[in-house]
Amino acid sequence: MSDEKIFMDHVSTTPCDPRVVEAMRPYFSERYGNPSSQIHEQGVLASKAIDQAREQVAGLVNAAPKGVVFTSGATEANNLAMFGLAGIRGKEYRRILISEVEHYSIYYTMEPLRAHGYEVETVPVDKTGLVRPEALAKKLRPDTALVSIQHANGEIGAVQPLAELAALAHAQGALFHSDAAVSAGLVPLDMKAFGIDALTLSAHNFYGPKGVGALVLADGLRPRPRAYGGWQEGGLRSGTENVPGIVGMGMAAQIAKAELADTASRLETLARRLRDGIASRIRFVHFTGDRERRLPGHVSFWVEHVEGESLILFLNARGIMAASGSACSSNLKAHDEEELVASHVLAAVGVPTDICAGSVCLSLGKQNTEEDVERLLGELPATVDRLLMMSPSYADYLKQQKHR
Image (cartoon, rainbow, N blue to C red; front, side, top):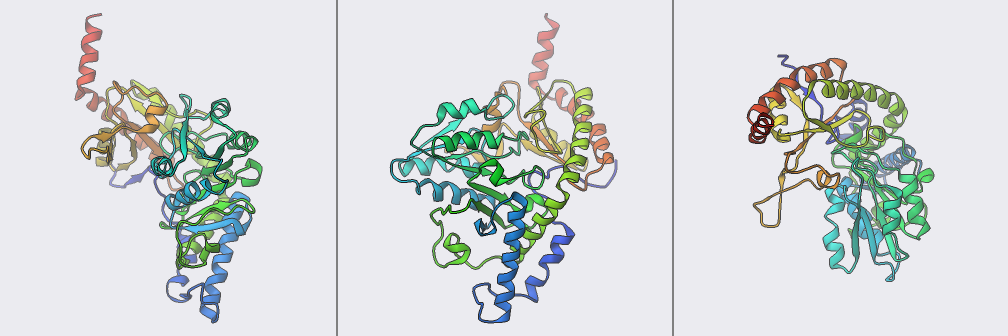
């Protein structure tokens, strides 16, 4: 076994590009000014750096730079969108729609929004994880204030038809927000062409630094602030800006835009090779997410009778780091603080809980190679077979087959 570690969990984060690190470096010690202190050179330099980053981020998604609101990450941006946009339509608009497969930073806003008098409903997805336009149309009403549907799902890779969905929302007078944290830099994004009113971005998902993200707003749209205290970010996000992080996000966005086509093409080729290899070598495998409309470099699946987290742990012991979209998410607990919570994404796409004990997500990045793919394919079959031999449900399956 090679001692070299292989990282295949890029949907959770990406390594910071060396060019991004270099761009950030001066703003830690040389250009350390507070952007609000524009009475002297240091403050002016910091302010200009943020303005440049705003242009770079806007360029990635074809938006106006003045619409870029920098945040601490995608979670804050999603919260600003949900709570900030919900109330700007007026008291007669009290209905909010989200998809069944949203990130938790959207999904968990439902309860507090309901506590504030909003009617929040989920829009179902089909078995591939896509929101069909007709499914959204059935849920829309004239009193709908906001529709939030993610661009892509990190667990199953499905990429939503945003332009069609946004057009339906606008036809009913609703605003349309999308969480593009895991898709930006991999899939083309055009806020104006897609008709998106607000878009969430996360720097560390496209080779930028952690701790910085953005909510990008269409012209003229102004949500209610979630933090008060100053006029930073147009008064929508008070607090001294994370200048090095913002500079890094800007550079990462510029690189992502320039290299998007080549990166996506290469990752699609690797993912196709990986998926075909798994399909031909693994028994009882079921792939998740739409086959065509999916993130480049993303392969997700579950294996009957095999616990996804156990499979991930065995692979990790062999030097291969991946993620489990588990039916029992180990870092989440139900309200009683003891029972583990099932993945709402797997439940939404109809994965049967009686024979699925968790899914596997393999997300490739720019540093992955054909050799990485072949090494995983070499390790996976024996690992699955070992876990099958340890599985009580597989033992029951063999007994049933024997008595047929």
